[in-house]
Length: 592
Image 1 (cartoon, one colour):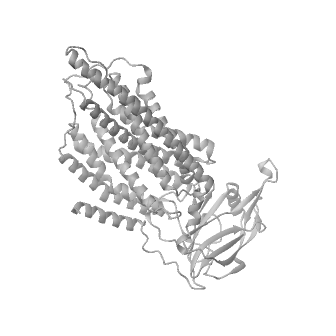
Image 2: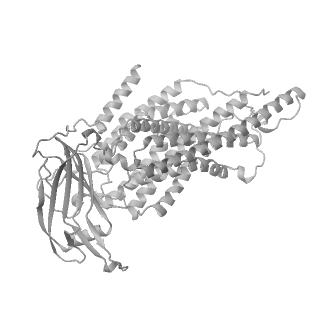
């Protein structure tokens, strides 16, 4: 193994362990009777607004003495987790029956605060021995009344824990709120509240290694799997029909073209050329804005590599349910480590396009995706700070991310750029480019860029839209997504359909004697990202109950960044496929 590769692997391992995806401080989860088992309160927030979460004790619950914040990894902080020691004592195999942990007189302000929380369906989340606990803090009693002013609001004051254990290990925990033990918080007046909890222990034969299966099973239920497989079959049929149709049409048309051009060469040398052969002297003319084009390809290649690595980690089981922040950690670390790929791809292609200012190209590559992402983050972090939400990153975390970008991402980008510049690869064009470009004939409106992008984006989007709902329900909701194998198959189908539709549209463009296919193939390939963003609008208004300025800005802000990433990645796939195709057809004919 070469020295640079070894150094990169060591750097990756160091970053992963430092960022917290590899947990070295985790206990072995073995306890004796009466041992203290770690219980942490994490956050509270409106159930329908997953981004709008607050610290547990931001609500006026009883705060126990000596509350300690848990030290969190980078991914946990990015995920909005803020774990603190919980007010309950759930020692191993220590049963308790309606034990009071706090008596408190709620002031009018605190009653109003609880009522607003109950009205917005606030839930709480805790972790017991790294197992998640969920529950609602109260309920709204409507009793058939339509006028909201007549609704009654109640706060739960008794939580019942049922814990399953196997020998010396905790296997499962369930929390149920006692529906008969309530505090009325409908009116703005002082209320006496006595908060209690009950703990029951039961033995189970479920092995410790399978305790997380319960959470993974929810997305593998038969009726969900049927829908997933229907999605796969629907996508596969789309791919087969499209592939068969395009292959048949293109092969037949190309065969006729090759035969026609061969006969033309034998019949008369002075006969005027038509179709895509006519523009052979222009088809490999370098595109306008070549620095931006090379930077887009570099960023797209990096994001494609990042996606493949994320899929590899997910398929080997790294992102098991409630492995707090593992996905965010992996995204930050792998993006940092793959920046060299962006630098190399952009710089080498820019030099192939006879670009001179490779340093500016490298700066453009570094900021093409990170720039919009950074601006979006600054705005959304400011919104989160204004709301005092846990989505607001602490100053220390921002410093860590800046250090990773400064000490890892930027140097690797520069090293990749230098390697790309020194590769001295020449652009492989099978035909010579003429000195002056031919004029493009007038074309009908449906052959312009926007209608072509609409056609190119619709088919790949139709192959993935069923799976998109489950991903959105997981990312912007509380559904658990664990069927990564199906998602990977859908991703492969997406790549195939994008490549084929871009190749087909490129052929029709060249056949119409339009030689400016470089940017068009990139835009057509990436247009699926625009369709996904359009789906965001549909999902927000028709399929979710999200509301409020913070949740809306987070949803549309971060989805804009994700869809922009898809645009760059699929645009790169579309262009690469089109380039292979164009090289192949022009290599197959004789041109003067």
